[in-house]
Image (cartoon, rainbow, N blue to C red):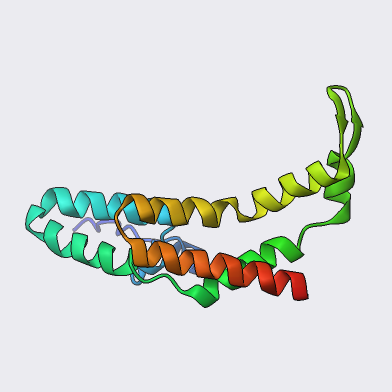
Length: 147
């Protein structure tokens, strides 16, 4: 009676096991763009969830943290470097930039994101949220001046 040759499967190595995708907790590991894509796909597949998603979005956008905004503004302003000012002020191929003008531009850029967020919420009709961001910006400016 002829014997059949049995093929032995190679034993998986630790590196083979580690290559399997870790799907547990995947949502927590996604970036903002990936999360947005998941939400869009989910809402396309389940349009009945749109009302709940809208309500959640309004709740989140309506309640900005004044303290977080103030801390961000203070950090953005106090992390500006003299070298950044030196690089902008003075003589350039396009002309001369006054140090005060260069400083103003740096300060405006440092808080531009917060101001854009404030304006966006105002455009959404969320006056209280916009006002809270404004308070955070002013508080952050004050904190930066005391730092």
